[in-house]
Image (cartoon, rainbow over all chains, first blue to last red):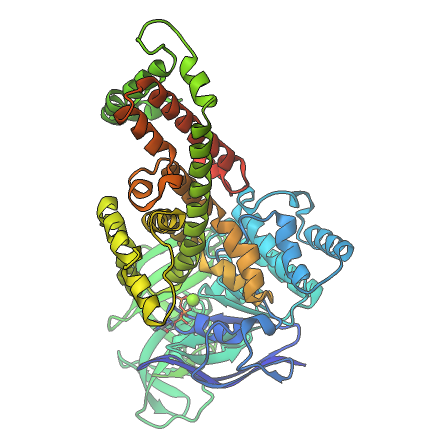
Length: 352
Length: 280
Ligand SMILES: Nc1ncnc2c1ncn2[C@@H]1O[C@H](COP(=O)(O)OP(=O)(O)OP(=O)(O)O)[C@@H](O)[C@H]1O
Ligand SMILES: [Mg+2]
């Protein structure tokens, strides 16, 4: 069932296009993430759904109703803010009870619901405290509890974990995901952290310059990016300039010819980018099929579980190779000549 | 107190010396004078006995109290909507509008009192205008109305500033969050905006109430004989009857009165910020 449907919504501020006409549907129980660099229109899109920003065009439908001209208060949504937006003068209990009071629930039911939800976010003992008496992570959970408690048709979150340190952020990602799955919450989530998006999302909308660059599952975005922007934004990537030199073949700037995989037909002489993920590359020859390039080692870094090798192809292009470290990796020295290779089909052609 | 915190105490020494010299010492002198007999000799509570047995004192104390309360109420009810309106404006517009709040603040209270006699008098602008429509004249001068108009005009900025400050300090997300949860404007105002602004209201109220307790020029120029306030009575004793003991006694009573008001307001919810406490 479709929870939220956007039809050609757009937002302009004078000549600035904050959001180009965008279509989108969020299905029930789905965790959908708006991912993208700063200024790409994520908040704009989220606020159009919440009703805090009025679109300059298009329609917003929630639960099958056109809410384009309905104010926020009547849209039946939940939202978690980066600043938590807990009421400082109310206790945690009062904060969570607030949306229930608005809905006119009887006292006893409010008490029960607040207690249940506090149990759910694993903070049953803080009911009597004021928000400033909780840690950032705890406040975040209360902000989430305050949404969950009234069962809104969708919960919106705008960079909710931005104010937390890395460790707590990872913990909260799992916590939010657990609650989302357990309660079947429909979630529209904003982040500019691609790892966070990959960890939590069922689908990701990658935004760029006010429009959706690609919409898909984390896997699709990672393994089948349809532009070099997506490939570059999601994970690490080597993007090599090339020109089409025949069916399945491209010529790199240094003249080498390699075999590639592609979705769209290629025309001879066309400029393209070749995507090679660092982890599909090997520092030895694994395939005699011609997917190999000669390079020079410029440096290597061991970062825990992986080793990163910084290479320079003949002709000057830099390439990153990432291998699992097993403690016995033969460490090449800077200046060593090596051959990198990959299995056929791992090199993807993208439009330049 | 840590060493470091104590060290910064040097910075307040000039202010402390100044306050002791021009405020604490004279005040102590006044207090002393109120408990010594008229010839400046032995201890005596005669001053207090005389004051508390004079009907004039009760009349003046009562009118001081009512005038202060009324002008505080008038200031609050005019200043709050004003501050609320200002808080909703864009910064540039607000800066311009603030000038209108500040002009009366920058004008001498004496000048304003004279201006009000022109405005409010029997043949003043207001009554002339009313006469044009065949109305009036309204008695606006040399009575309580005149005093309260004059005082409120002076006091409103003192009320606007703390209220505006506390309204502006409220993160806009709080109201947005409430709105998304489904709260209407009235509920947002009464459950969020107003309670969070209470410390500002308290500060403004206290400031204005205490300022009004000590008003002198406005009741003297715009009030009638009935509208004498305690400061005017102090003036009367020092200049007309040269009764310094009575004047000192009155001053001490007025001072204590102001202290009690401050203390009481600080007990009210939202008022603890007045004594440096953290309310939220
Ligand atoms: N009120 C406004 N007036 C003019 N331009 C605006 C306004 N709000 C946003 N914009 C512009 O719209 C674009 C998208 O902004 P938006 O806040 O949606 O970005 P974002 O993806 O949320 O970025 P961030 O990750 O930094 O939060 C930006 O170029 C921004 O400058
Ligand atoms: Mg944003």
